[in-house]
Image (cartoon, rainbow, N blue to C red; front, side, top):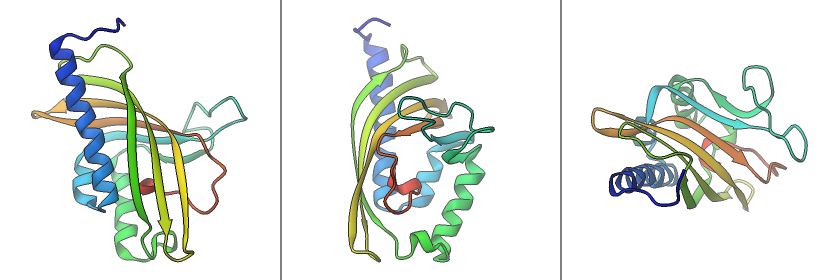
Length: 173
């Protein structure tokens, strides 16, 4: 792919970047319904684990992952558990601040589909332990346009610091 995007490709990429910013804001503000609405029903949400220091797992069906949901129903179930206050990992709810950068298309943006990567850091404060941790990595998103809105069809999050000091959940990445 060339380094120069057409005006339409740039506008499409900018629309995708806005979706990623919205995702971060919704997670930080615990706006769960709006966060879930960013995902298509048949989305895939995957955080692979590292096989060794240089290689990630490649098959979420056959290998260990930090997090894997094959569709939005899995994400919805996780939000139900968070809201129930019966999730020990999420009680009290950690506070987060997501910082995003490094947005790049993985291929030329199309009218109905965008594949892009970004880098991220999430600072997390765990009130129960009075501790803060920072998780960081990169993400690959595939966005699709449905009824005039850009939605997440696939999200793959690569956690670079995978020695996890406490617990990891969807709002930490």
